[in-house]
Length: 325
Image (cartoon, rainbow, N blue to C red; front, side):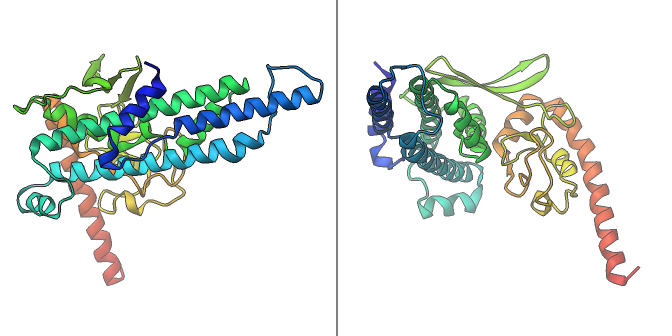
């Protein structure tokens, strides 16, 4: 079965949830029109060269890329919102969890919670594959690399779904609940499963896709060069220890990343303004604390001392400022 048909069948099965998707058939029609119009123009001009295409394509620049951009934005926005609500329920406790259930953010039981997590991972991965395939189709039609350039642009705009911190959180959520007694009868349709793997003591989250594509998320902090502790994902998608991120952003842990200057840059990609929208990866933190208990306890003791020191310095400064010293 061709991927386009498989994708359409999958999205039709999601009609009840009203999830946005890519209009692959419409995007392919745009590409066919582009190729047809270009070849017709070549015949009119008396030139036959099927292995070139104009640098500026009015059909694609005016229709294909804007349409794809809007659809990608809708998919990522929907995924992030639903994943955030799901994890909010899972991480809530006591009265808070009952209140969320009562509000009806997600209906159902614990089984439904687990299945919703699997469905969201499926949704993210199949849309990521769909985007990759349609951009490869664009480059094939145009004999260009503009599709790859567009993907890089999408990453800089934070609408690349594989870049979403909520995907990392859902993968950790899936692993955290995999050992529960609740077994879903329906097997994952598009991914074999998520795993926490260690290579030379360096951890990474891995997810195998049905299309022979493997997603790996490195869990080593590039600042302290150790396993991320109390991990946080910046809006550019890079993951650091919370304290390391605060240090890179030139803020104290008391002030937090939201107080970081908009000019402060990510230590890896050098993109500015990535700290204010940072996401605390709580599910990933739970997973790593269970998988590396001795390391986690050691880091906990070390960072507790540093947090106390920074808090003490912060309030001493505030007191001196108040009394005008």
